[in-house]
Amino acid sequence: MNYRRLGNSGLKLSELSFGSWVTYGAQLGDDTARECMAAAHDAGVNFFDNAEVYAKGKSEIIMGNVLKTLGWRRESYVVSTKFFWGLNDGPNEKNTLNRKYLMQAIDASLARLQLDHVDLVFCHRPDPDTPIEETVWAMHDMIRTGKAHYWGTSEWSAAEIMAAWQIAERHHLAKPVMEQPQYNLFHRERVEKEYARLYRDIGLGTTIWSPLASGLLSGKYNNGIPTDSRAALKGYEWLAESILDPAKLKQVRLLAPLAADLGCTMAQLALAWCLKNPNVSSVITGASRSSQVIENMKALDVVPKLGADLMSKIDAIVGAPA
Ligand code: NDP
Image (cartoon, rainbow, N blue to C red; front, top):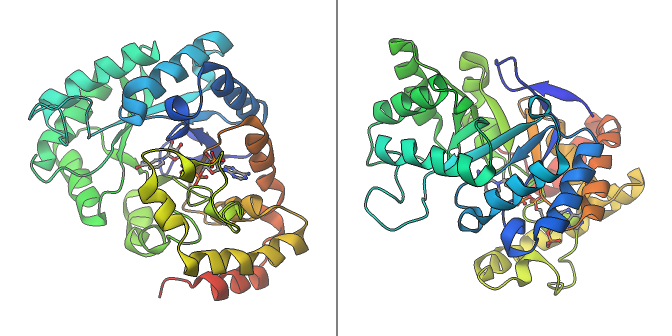
């Protein structure tokens, strides 16, 4: 495993990390979650991603149980959570980044995770109803009180991130260190274009999500929806619709021979491609079984094989942002 600095911060994250969205709580209980995290840890993963809203808090409970059972030294791993959507319906309990919600949310997450701090905390989406200054102060206080070590955003625009950073700079507060955007062969614009200045100007780090576009880039949907897959889950019909997009499926089929020539799987090719981007601090992988974790971790061996010619061939298939 290689470790990359999280943007300009001194924190080092494994290039490949592991997250619990969809899987923990909906597909996996404690036992399979433990097998997956142990397999990731064996491969050198030191960052485990979570969020309050995943399986309505259950994902944090499962990860907390697993961390306790596995008994790793707390200093040796990085764990995250994220806030925005909330778990309750009140006006100050959902779709907000106001101070009241954030200060309560972190305590509740820590209780579910059975931890006294998380390392990373993300504002899971921008909140147009709360002044960014109020959110920045609340995130600063979360860090000052030792409940989190670094804070960042997820799917904020470049302008919103810059506004938060400048407020923090002006008031000598903890600055946003990282963003968590979607990034994969089908979704490139924001990471490659919109944030380009932020890497240079404020040293933004990125922990990117859905590197396989929810599994689509593994090729598993080339012949329909397998019954044991994410797209077959009840409540994920919206995902099945986007996964069965004929244009994307066509591109996945065109990528298959490139993976075959490299002697790797489609999933490994798609993950390795994300790692080629130096502005990606960590690629958060997801898996519903430990065999996928083991396969995905071997993407590290594919990265050196992705030369300029091959990267151009990939661009020709999926289209690079202008
Ligand atoms: P991926 O796009 O990599 O999808 C992971 C899913 O793909 C797995 O659960 C599995 O689903 C399938 N899969 C994984 N490996 C293989 C393989 N080798 N062969 C075949 N199928 C495979 O990532 P996620 O969408 O899960 O996102 C990763 C993490 O990013 C999340 O866990 C979460 O922590 C974070 N995230 C953050 C978001 C944000 O808004 N900040 C939003 C979404 C995710 P299956 O059960 O079908 O086999």
